[in-house]
Length: 120
Image 1: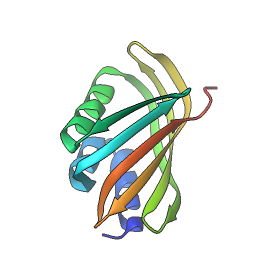
Image 2 (image 1 turned 180 degrees about the vertical axis):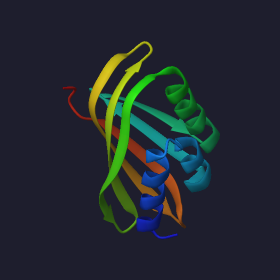
Image 3 (image 1 turned 90 degrees about the vertical axis):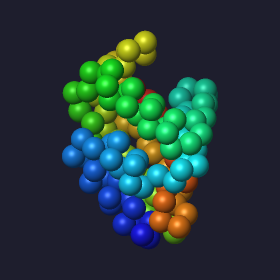
Image 4 (image 1 turned 30 degrees about the horizontal axis):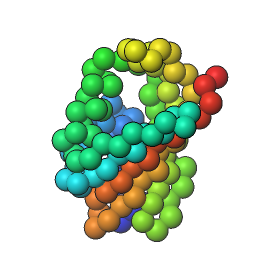
């Protein structure tokens, strides 16, 4: 799969409420996830660990809105804008945008970086 096809498939599945299926289909076994918010950064290594974090988020958060759209595709990377209105246990209410930057190699996502936009 080329980068554009990977990006479109990720968005399609996410917007259908199938984030875990997207990860199962599109993530490389050695994917690395980077989360960044207010200067803090954490890393998660490996498909199973990344999927476990996603399962926790969707299983424990109150999700009012979670939509995504592809903002840009460029060679082996793509940028996704996530529009979120959620309450996360231990964090609180999050209303605003989050951006995900994805790196693709051999048709699979090998890295993802998440950046929080200022909360409304």
